[in-house]
Length: 224
Image (cartoon, rainbow, N blue to C red; front, side):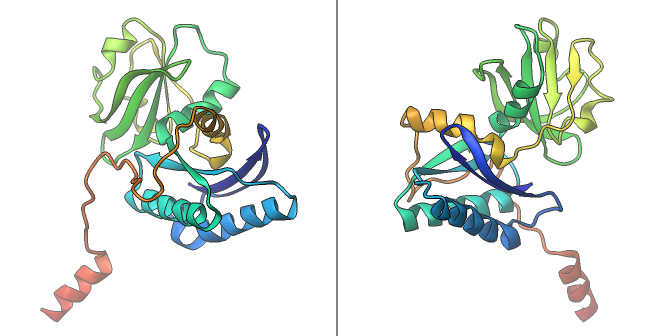
């Protein structure tokens, strides 16, 4: 997901999204330019830039944070890091009526049967910290045995046939879009929870592993 949004006084006034794949390198900067131009043309003062801080795609996080830092430096703005898993919870909390004891388990696909996930209560208090889970039928039973647990995000679909517990519920359509950052970002700004623009780094969860492209491998094999 590549998306940019602008909020003013608790309302999203501009947003732009691309769902066509990992296009951050090509699209993120133009999207940001449009958002900043919209703010300037409507006399909306900018206070801060919020950026998804991870976990997630190494390349997407790196490009997003680098772009956010550039805007902060150019405009003298504060930087806010938004937990990507908490961000996934926002559309669910806005759209669904959940039981009081419900737990939320956002999942980001980490390939094969692995997901990046955490568990939160309805107030987004952390019940279990983020980690990389290799999902089997008993992975979340500690919480499923006593709570209804809602699984969502692009990692949840591949777990539907594995997590068969009667307390496991799956919700589709929750995506980490910039337009849903607004309540988390504004709360962080009110609390003074901002990042050091110079030293802030994304939370990758796993170390980056560089792999040569298939085209490069074919070229090397052809030359030998």
